[in-house]
Image (cartoon, rainbow, N blue to C red; front, side, top):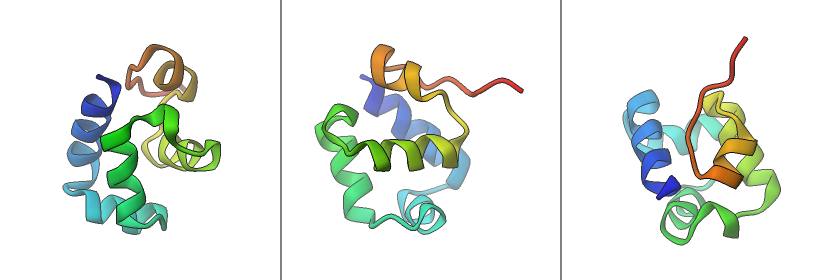
Length: 72
């Protein structure tokens, strides 16, 4: 569930997964695998990179599977 929302948010912010991969300096295949197999299977470093690049709350993404922008 969270992965679908995360994918939609990435597309909204970066227009494509490839653009997002370039922006985060992560391999496209890594991002694709995270979205297919779940954020829970990703390394902490990759989750941190994704959340920072999108300015979303890491706790809500990982525990509640919600994509929520950070405040402030």
